[in-house]
Length: 264
Image 1 (cartoon, rainbow, N blue to C red):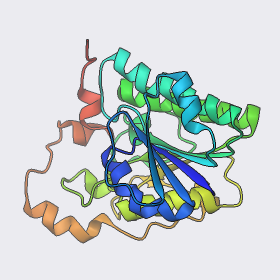
Image 2 (cartoon, one colour):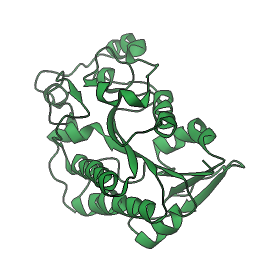
Image 3 (cartoon, rainbow, N blue to C red):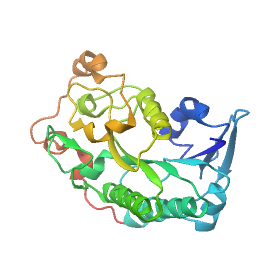
Image 4 (tube, rainbow, N blue to C red):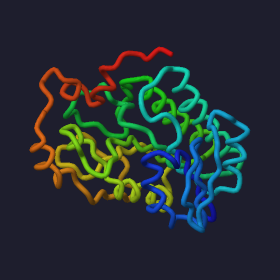
């Protein structure tokens, strides 16, 4: 690609991916509301509010692919979720359609299926059971991606990301952890695979205690290389395993499922 757009560049995952996916294009266009500094010679930054359709249209112009991390990444009031995650996602896909972009990596979330029980085996064909307004907005994004594939032929990989941090820090993450390197490899396969159509894949490393089966997404050729087992002794030594009535023991979405609606 000549130019790859990454939204949400000032967020934790955006920052972590800059050095991992920069080789996918001649230029990496970074975007967020918050400024991004220390640009390399192959990076450019464009400030953009994703809820502003005209600004998003200008942002997407001249790009060949999109990595869409932008939006609200935690639970919030409906107005905030709708603006950032629903209106913003629609604006991204509409701009992609208008400018002929053929493939998008969409950062969805495991909270799309957060009301399933821990240990239930899920895959990309599992029906959504959102655990929050945030999870609901990510389910909308997956359906939007499906619409734009069926109607306009825009391919998307919708990654239901688990817990992507430098290392797992609690017992739940022994099942849901996604290393930054494995996430970078997933994005790489999104744009390297011959055909992706509309694919839902769970973003998790090769965790022995994992809940998710990515067999339906095997055509991506993505093979996670890291595992939370490397850190199991460290996590268990820290103590405080969740009790049987704790949200982590009741739902895959954990505290997101237990949280009430946030009112503005």
